[in-house]
Image 1 (cartoon, rainbow, N blue to C red):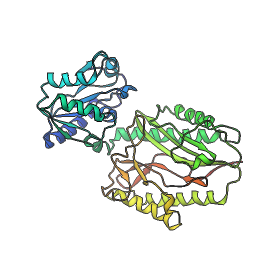
Image 2: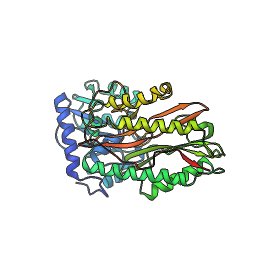
Image 3: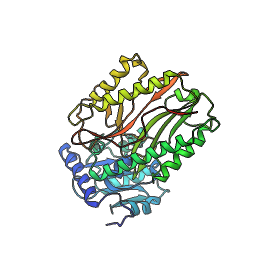
Image 4: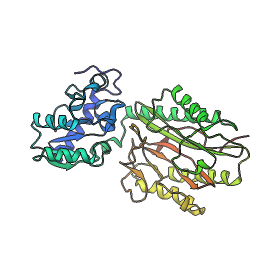
Length: 386
């Protein structure tokens, strides 16, 4: 077996995860599961790389160790970060679809049932159609979210990384607020946020901090563009951290000068919305109960149409371009799956109206045996600098 450097978990924990996946694919009659999400590959093997933009796959059979397929340049990263030994690597002189087809044939999987994730970002329609054409005797079945669903409940070791990420995200936020004043730029605030993150040993997060000022603070999902912060500007801060790829995030709003009463009132509204949602964050409650409770507070105050998103989403393992596990589970209406101990969510009530306000608060929350634990620790208030 490989001797990886700084494996995030014990090999026993990886084998337990693998065993759960193998049990599921046996039950589904899948001969080979082709895992193409790097987050899922990481979950099962420890492999981490910035090379996820290139086609790669982890082939999992109902028994035995998995097989990793990828570029030859990744060999040392695989040896240094993953516990698996079975590698099938191709030179860049061989087209990856040709190489993948060749390996499937050499392994005699070309007459098997192969499970794929049709929702995977890095399995393109073009790649899949080529595989279908070259492997006409394969029975392809959609096996989306098998691994993601198992990732929802974090083990004690995973929870420890989430707690560290919560502390790092909080320090990044406090560091950014420490730099807030009239005359700085959004980029200055980004630099301060990164200083706080890296002081707490965060790795690069799946998303950079979302920091924007003035009118742009009302534009959800805007990013820093170097704009100056002026007297009378509100500033949107949403900062995430990553510890061993496990993420936590927190959202706060800053204001330079004397804030209008509306901003103070909306901040208090979001705080009450968080409190209402947290009261529903206990094992056994359906996830939608959190959304309903948080949304009712805001709707009752007359801002229901300004709360334009789900109340939250699962958060954990992530690589760019996102830090969430929203594709697996969200705190939203219609999500009736129960909350379970070990689940972690980014819970973020917020209200937006272009050119007027963008106000919200958020916490990263772990579901415990008896309720919840908030992993971020920035004071819930409008941060005012005069």
